[in-house]
Length: 426
Image 1 (cartoon, rainbow, N blue to C red):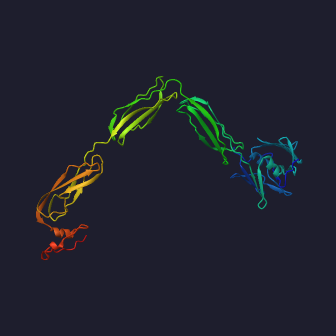
Image 2 (cartoon, rainbow, N blue to C red):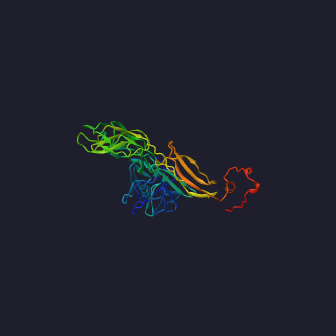
Image 3 (tube, one colour):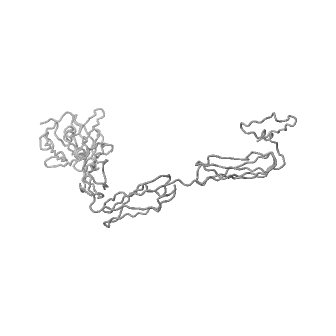
C-alpha cells in the first residue's frame, strides 16, 4: 500500500449544501486559508460554510467543495459511512474510520483515516492531491493552501458535410473541439476555411483552438476535393455604351450574361469596372458570373481607351479699382484669371501695368495667362485714362511708396525743386 505523506489535506463533506462552484467551467486554481471561509476559484471569490482547520497538526478543508469544483460527483452513504467520489478519470471510495481507500479499483492507504468532525467528513490533503492529479502548496507562515489543476491542452476537431464537392457548392463545418479538463474553448484559428470554393482542386482546411487557461491545441486538418460543377458553365458577357472616352466621362455597362441551362445568375465579380476613369490609358474590364447552383463562368473582358480631356485655354481676367486716374494716384489691379479645366495657371504676362501713371493719355493694360499644359489665354485688356492733373510726381511717389529692393536715382533731381515731403503715418 502506498502511504500518503506528510501534510494532509482533509476535505469536509457537507451532506446538505449544493456545490459552491456552479459555473460550467472548472477552475484551474483553488486558494484556501485555514480559519477563513473566503476561497478563490481562479480570480473569483466565493464563500464556503466551513473554513479549513488544523487538527493535531493536520490541515482539513471541505470535500464536496473541492471534489465538485473539479467536476466530480460526491455522494454519502450514512449507513455504511461511505464517501463515493466519481469523475471522468477517477472513481474513489472512502470510509469513516478506515485508513484504506479504493482508487479506481486499487487499494490505497492513507496516513490518517477519514473522520467526522461536526457532522463533516474529512480526508488527507496529499491523498486528494494525488487522486485529482493536482499540485498542492501549503504556506505555513500564512496557512494558505493553493491547489493547482494541471492543464491538458484542448483537442481541435471538426467535420465537413462532404469531402468531395463541386465548385461553388456550400460546405458546412461542425466544430467538434473539446478540452480534456473541461476548460472553455475561447479562441479558434482556421487556415484554409471557405464555405465555397471557386476553382477545382484539393484544399487543406486546418483548425487549432485555445482553452481559457491559454493552452493551444495541435492543428487538426482535413482535405476536401473540389470538382468542376456538372453541366454547362454560365456565360459572362457585357457591352459598353462607348469604347473611347475622355477622362471623367461616364461609362454605361450593359450586362448580357446568361446560363445556357436556364439557371439564374446570382453573383457577379467585376474587375476594373468604374463609372468613369480619372487617368488616361487602355483599361481591360473583366466579368465573371455564378449561378445559384454554384457554377462559375470563365472570365469575359472588354477594353476601353481613355484619353486626356482636350485642353481648353485659360481665361485671363482682372479688375481695377479705377479706370480714370490723376497722375500719381495708385491703381490696384486684382487678378481674376481662371482655367475651365481646373488646370493650374503657371505664368502671367502683363503689359502696361503700373502702380501709378505720370503722363496724360490712354494706357491699355493687358494680361495673358498660361496653364500647366502650355496653353495661353486670349489677352484681356482694360484702358486706363490718365488726366492732366498731377497729384504727385513720379519721384515723390517712388520715395513715398517705395518697393522693396527698388532703386531711386536722386542724382536726377534738382535740389532747388526737390519736393518737400511730409511724413506719412500709417
